[in-house]
Length: 242
Length: 242
DNA sequence: TCAGTTGTAGTCAAAATGACTCTAACTAAG
DNA sequence: CTTAGTTAGAGTCATTTTGACTACAACTGA
Image 1 (tube, rainbow over the protein chains, first blue to last red):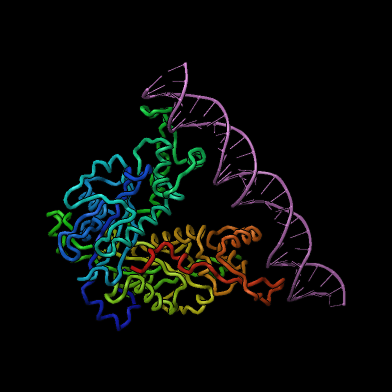
Image 2: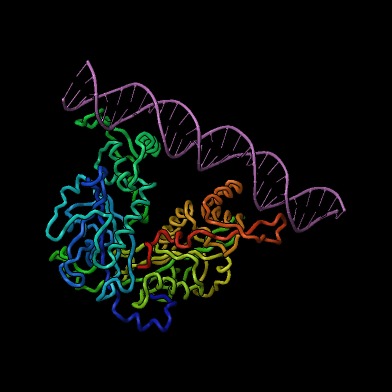
């Protein structure tokens, strides 16, 4: 909303100053096996800054908001540029607008967070300036990005506790054990397989297929498919794209 | 985050274009008795636009983001300008950045939502250009503000269902029945007093005082005080103000 | 054929929930 | 002063949900 009668006279001069820069960043989560633990763990891709400020430090992928893109489109495009992948889940996280986030100029960052299926994440190419890091115990990042990642982690765990976003870490078909592994990795605690199965089934978010996953050293588990409303997951977003 | 190596050459020219305008708006909720129902109902203040676009239509209070304020400060200041009151609850709602929200120029609005205690809300002065409206069944508003209000309502009801924000509609001391009335008004269904009491007590968000509310036509109810972490309510916000 | 492993159903006690009853403590009417 | 009306607040009880656990099914690999 631009200009209402509630702008006091004292603010008039400030309004004429150049507005803050607008940027879009994305926290991209994927699950990967970790060396030390038998559980999956959360990873995210970071990019190395090639200019000041914070030159050579790692930062969240992002860039300025272009005139041609809506906020969501801008985030999706940026994710494409970084990992070459389309996210199965992309939702607005928060708008960060503290006065001193960037030493040079005032920057307001609208941050999105994304989930990537493990199968896709494997293809995500690393390079000199793009690397995957474990989401917990992250080194010091550029700007306020450590806090942003922490907040994204908090939101992810919160939403996982009673949402249906876990499926976005997986492919189209999956076993119940795989869903359970996602929960265990994100919430970082073990979950009883039998009870978890019972609870998943009564949410009606999944439906069984006729297929079974072969090749394990054990009884082949049935494959399931996500049956919930695909938009129900994005329920942190407003109904339509605004 | 400004500029990463992931900005393609095609985007360079766009970066030089003037950035979108940045605005702050606030959805302010208060509970008031309604004429038709015996329940409280949700109201919010709107302002009449005094210039194009949408001249003379009602809109959410808001204004441009000034250089001197953080996002939260800007929202708080705006709320002060509109109602003359400090909110007991103020949290970021969403950043709206669709391409065609405003007919003239591209505007990205960072919207906050606030809760006002009933006692305070009574003092909020109305004027020719500021009026309170019932939150449900709202008339057509300027810009995309109807959708914003709907989304704020959704978030409020969601958070009420298992949060501790109800207390922000009340004063420092309150009876359990008053808390129940807040729930009934927001969730729009009746709640069993005895069960509600039992559940409230085991959350440990409240503590009893030695005082009782006198003057009713019945046994005086005990007054309680909010004892939870005041920041726990703002748990939709990141830990510190960024 | 057997040991190892995981999938899947089921059992059972504990905890949480929803509908309900009962008494306490006040005001207002008579 | 007494009584009817009202809400506060404790308590009961059947149902549902949860967590811990058991048992059997169905595969692989030796």
